[in-house]
Image 1 (cartoon, rainbow, N blue to C red):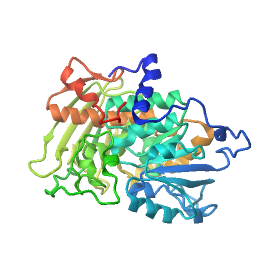
Image 2: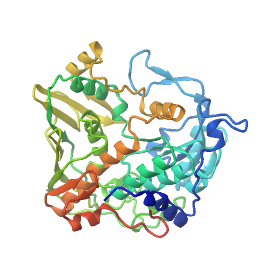
Image 3: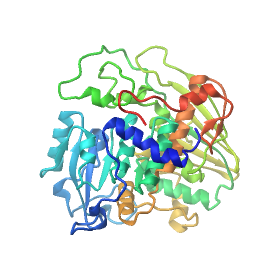
Image 4: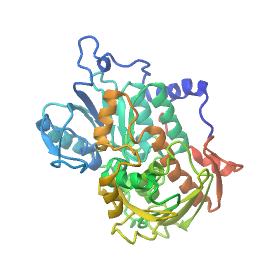
Length: 452
């Protein structure tokens, strides 16, 4: 897909907002600037939360924690605690009434409750939002939040299509918003230690990065049913293709359906390959070719790849990224997934990269304790970095362009697997070279009023 033209940047959001009933906001709210006697974000940030299931609950700021020391989200030394920055969870939204009620109890006080995220975005008291809805909602909700003048932390993967990702970048730039994407491995100490080690030249030139991960599930057949009374399933599906309600289509399990998720490569791949792109300085570019192989489900109700290997070739510098499920685990670290970075002078491993933590080899940890030679940015924590950037207006460590480039690896990897043939990729124009069939898969129509 070619980069949006100036006219596209002025028009594409208007089309989506008109369909979804959301107005555009071309100015920063007065509260964000501390005008009209209102408190600016540099003092206290008012957060709204869209999607408050398992991951979304982790972002809630309970009223009882205000001003307290809490366990540190990253182990950067000291006493293992951090002081929460001044912020509060003042508005909550979920299409599941049970989850909404549970979150309200966790926050305490009297948070505003919404079932429709558009109503939350209209709330002028909300400065920024945490979006932890299912994958197929990330793009539209982020774009609409930018339109409404909100800064955004959106869970990974950033998007389901190349078109969505580029639209997110354009919206972020047009409305001057801070957008952090939740591939939090970059903000964990071991990723910084490995990055520092590699950028200091300890491996020489890195020629290959080998990722490994276990296979995706196939899913035992489970009958469709009526949605639970407290779930607005029509809103849950939103822009995706409508499927009958099934307990294995929704909370958590949506990841294994291509309409809603995209398998392990889009789930954990958005963590493991995020660290790879960061270390290899590929936050604004992509590969020149891909080749994907593997096995689809033989039975069961899911349709993402069960086993899969994707080789991405990069140029200037020349190196290869391989996503393999399953692959060959690190010989030095015991973990279910991660990557080994192979250079001219040896290798170093980086494991996990998500909420389970991140690990790296002792040699990288020891080197980092002695020398910050790689000059890699050291994040105070992923949410902490986001909240700092709300105040400073700097780009966060996992800014939207970087996240779009990582999501692009996942998207084109799945397309290569679907077509089962090598593909040439133009990372500048974000299109496959001389392959109309593959290019038709870079976007998808939205359902009903939900589309770009």
